[in-house]
Length: 516
Picture 1 (cartoon, rainbow, N blue to C red):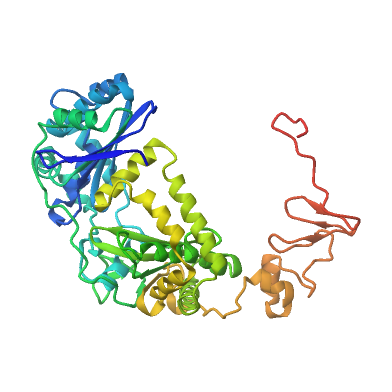
Picture 2 (picture 1 turned 30 degrees about the vertical axis):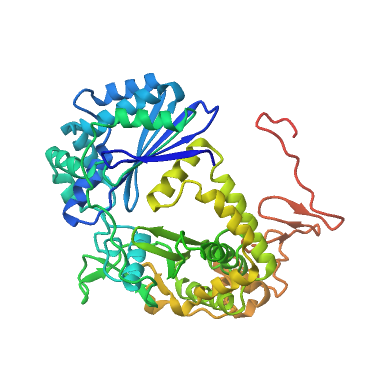
């Protein structure tokens, strides 16, 4: 990490200037508190984020775009659960001009009726109900941590009609309150000396005043989640006895979300817990992936990550599979968590997770843009700019015994297990999974009599215990060999294995037909 100097301007804006010698670009990240903690503001916040930067009192959208092009700059806006982030990438000589243009958008905004109407039409075309994954996370957080803006029914998402009916004047009033320097942070990564950048930012952004806005996430009422099970097969706004109705996600995927306790990033014990989380489900060959996806084929998306914001932190395990698989997946997650908590990881697993974490921390800073974004994240979390550099040393010092101790926090009896099954497979009609359950066509390879003849005929499943059709043009199970009269075995993709040797592959040719 390059040398960073920080200062708080008289307006309340915290500026972090990092020197990156030789870089042709300067990177700016402005992080403004923007949590959707007040339902009455959610619609205006939705539109403001979409329209910010589309005009000022001095320039139209086109004129702003032309000025950015003259500077060699690109402006973008991102909204997270708790922040509004303005990102600027600009050619190094254009840094002063980029700060001037940024100050213009912050201090003299104009939300034109046409731009607001365009954003409203886009909102009207968006899905009217939150996705199943969003509803499932809200349900899990509500059960685990209690009432909170992150788990509320609106979930920070503006009601569609409110977004469409908003007037441009409402956005101007919200801008005055919410887009303020008090409580905000600006990260500037440039080739100039940090002191020069601090002085430049102080001069250009001096007219920007106000705040703090108070739009920050409150803490969860519990530090660790309340354990239990949540079954989500309903959606808000229906007519069920509990005030909600059946979900309309017909043909959707089964989802499982486990929420457990985590160790805060700033805690000295975070590094061992991070390694425990990684070897559980932080990369492709971690325990959960090997067990749920590779061994049993139950899920095609498996992950485990630590989520942290102003509300608190939690471990989140997420799996997606075919309809009807949620109960089996949740059982395998429980078994994997219990085994790791009871026995701990092997030294080889710890070393593998440590190598992955160390490499990823370097990969995360591979470009100037990524370094600037990382610095902005550290600033928003209250961490020091060089936190990541010191974290590598802390990872290197972690012992397998420390990781085993951290893994005990992964006990499934301390977690919330939330499941969702789409309406296409009603819960009462699902057959329970057996521990050794395998796909029907795979089972038919070895137990053909266990599959009814009409099912074998319909899906082209094998009829002999050997699992291969003896007919020249007979059916073959998905992804399996077909036996031909000449004694060779042919895959569905056309590759062939002969009795005399290994598979003979067809000649590869490029797009022009020439051999490769």
